[in-house]
Length: 284
Length: 72
Image (cartoon, rainbow over all chains, first blue to last red; front, top):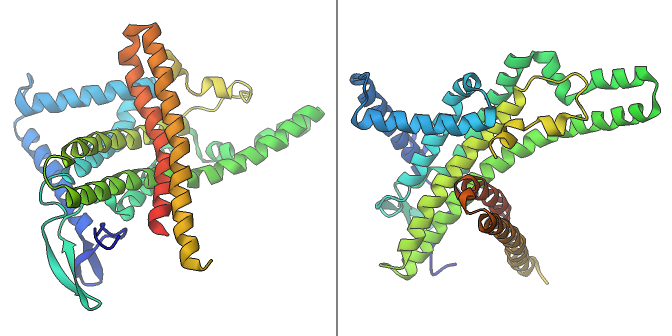
């Protein structure tokens, strides 16, 4: 692809503070954070009992989010406990994605001499097109989910979900050969769940990164070929994809959180697949 | 066949196969949703969000293939 230059996989460094490189995607995420902070201060300055204007919009948004989350957690108190994590993820990711489509992102930049040729380095770039950001969000969200699970159930019972020693012991004590075999299989499944945690991190980060990066490449290539009317539907697609990916990321973190804080059933291995998402069935 | 040719071939096959199967999956999800809406037209509002969610999960697999194509 030497005729049309696609944006590179890694984010380009604009300048460095000491040894810390500041990339163009970091500038975008910083801008999103500043927008959220300014909006928050703006709402907080004059809070009225009967909301009007921007406060009304924010409260409506909050109501819609809590309604969606109630359908997964099933309990308003649990929703309020999870809302800071999931709500902030949703708003931040959606804002980052939508800010990446604004005119000027990706086209305003400077020319650097890299390896003998002069290359164009854009000053701003869609924030989630950097694997660092999505990986950081995925890792920190899952760490928080584990901490919430430990806080809700207790450390040994939570670890018992993965290393199923207690169930194995109970199965061996009952001296029933079928139960012992099932016990060993469940032990293996529990260890496999540890691997699944790593998969969760990888899939969360790569899904968001891939979608936004692919959209960016698509828009860049398309705008290089046809400059005026043809990119419009694809910009609309980017809007939709940005919103949907934010929704998916936050909803997945919500599901992981509600599964992690679910109280353990006593002899519920046979019932576990049915009981896990009664809330999802209820909403149908 | 040297390494460069093999890389290019691998990239092509990755995105070709990795794009076909998720496309099929997304088509199936959409088809089932259309069927349900046809049987019960009032269920559009209930069905819309889970359908979009399911499609995004299926599409994520295609995105993994796209990442490999970009990285290699």
